[in-house]
Length: 148
Image (cartoon, rainbow, N blue to C red):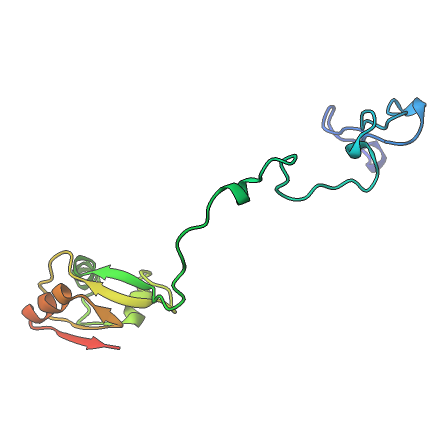
């Protein structure tokens, strides 16, 4: 085999459609655009969302609700998850850095501890927010709560 003998596998390549090169091309006359009308002309374009004069979807569907620009988004972590981390890693202090290392939160996330699950370990928990039930459960296990 030589470089000049290389060619693609049979059926793997296609000829490109050459438009506007006369009748001999097989695409002469209207150049595959059909007869007359806006779509056959050069420079034709249609507005995005145009539905032929019918009221477009983005105008038929009503707007509702609002986005609260002051909303604070927290990443929720339950007590059961904290107990699982203590069992796995043996930590006595749970802080955002530990949760990032465990892959539970991203580095910029605000963390809120929620009270679902049971906690038996004595922990010092540092987070940005706590639910009342989580604070009660942590303190019942002789742990401490530190709000960042």
